[in-house]
Length: 376
Image: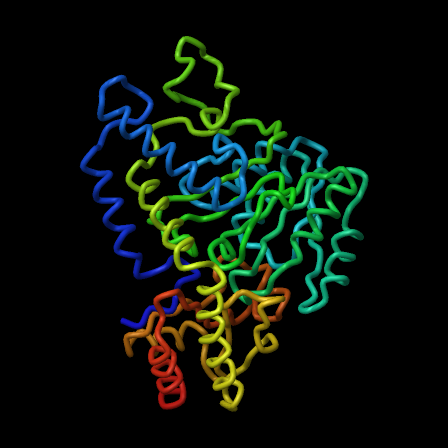
């Protein structure tokens, strides 16, 4: 199988990730809950993973690294932990349902939002669009760093500065960018949410929520943390405040190994490899009369290496099915991001998405091009 659905989850995983996950299963002790050697060993390993993630994302205090189930969990924790009735939020026109559905649900609690348009290749207009969406009740800006459908990058450094200039909080959804774009919490992001199983090459069921030093977020999940057990109140200290219940120890160990893999390969080298493949594919597709492309040739200043398209006369799901019969795995449809499709006029038809990884080979892209040219 030629696997080109890496924006959903990366495959294959590095062998070191599988090994680390299996090795953790051999310990199978609950970290931080007991005083015996296995429990203490598990706790130390989780701390080392927290330290690895903190170093990778430029976090001074590893306690500010919170392990979650996925990026969606992280986003829900951040949105619902920070907003109160009467608050207003600014989002982009490219957001995933991980952002939009929680905000839509919170309308019933008196919370509102405004979508700011994103202008491809024009960071000034995009920033102005966000500025004009701010009003007197705005509490925070939350936006994706890169669209999971179109690969379009948002100028999050400028948007973070804009938010802070207006006294607002800034939350980044880095599900599609972590591991492909360098991310440094020193830029001032208040909350960074990301998946562990995509560009960080960790197992599914892993995610991160990284907090800045000054955070007053409320909890949406409470329970046992192995600390302050005499009290019925949730602990205030990080990371315990946001890590109730038994952690996904094998997944966290795999995620640590995935982050180390990205660090050893270098983000810039991974991105360069993936962009080379995507630009090559774009150049071939734009010469095929039946292929409809929606963005310019991807430029690493304004995109991540993701490319979506359609084929005249075919539904996007039909194209994906044909490719699947030829042992090529892609993603078609709305990609859980109807706002991004609405912005590009593809809400009624979806799109076929191609997303390579560090392991994708040039001949695999050639095979995709051949099947598209011969079968459609």
